[in-house]
Length: 419
Image (cartoon, rainbow, N blue to C red; front, side, top):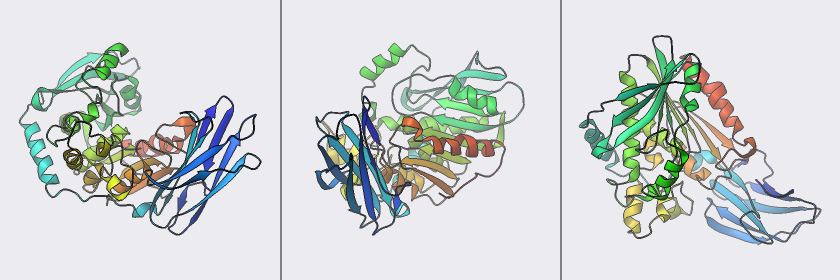
């Protein structure tokens, strides 16, 4: 990763371009300084699993380059963090690597009553009539029809979203699009672009909020009732904020199945980060109905990872315990951990993860991926953090938009590749 200040930047990279090693391998890291001045005084920290400090020291630069050597003794990931003088938030760069990525397993087993819990929650949902309501609106795209949609959810809450499809035709493959974290409205193009390609596309607002209010509305919600929404009720599996969100996805799949314009064959779900979390969840909760699941840097994986010295995925329940009983928060997190849904998935899955991701660390994603027994394509992005900075996630997007979605839309098998 390159961290920049003006024209000066520091980069950290392992000697293997793909960042993938085997147990016993030595990693030769190169730290390079690019700037008009000589390399500043810099310090490195090695973090096993993105969390546990396993070494640190000062860097010795020669011709603006310095080296670090590490060795993988066990399967896992390693994050190298470099900070330089004067230390501040911008004077920081990281690099990542992984050893035996297919051998990283979850820190905790699935709760014995995991399936029973979700069966009971679905039963609760089904007692509430969905009552879908569609409001037609201009799509802004020729040949595409568009609606806003609302449905009922548990405990007096609602599901809000948008749906689009080609204006002509009888039956279409369905695509459920779920959203990343934050409090914001939905852009029409997120469904109309897919509808123009031939999809019946449904896009869910993560929260019980209107989808097209001014930006100020969402800012106020984020600072007010939805501030740190991920921690609301997180000390009880029955009150977690994610319960309503997860059941929104379940109901969305059920709704798509009832539409007369669905082709009855293809129902795909996709999302990034929190959307990737929902994607893996719903593919596990709806194993017979989802045709394929596409998740980029999925969140909420390996929630008890710190118990084995690794960093958990966002929203980091393990540490998000202020004013609460930590044991209760951590126990509740197990019922929302994507690893426990992943083992129920039966459809093909495309997953992308970044070796420099500190929000949804690669080990937290791999712990879930390795629970999947269905066909899967795992795209390891060596230069990517959580965001698509400088196109670092472009290969995954090529596989998603150039490979998987076109094939699935045409009713073909998922074009799984091994990397």
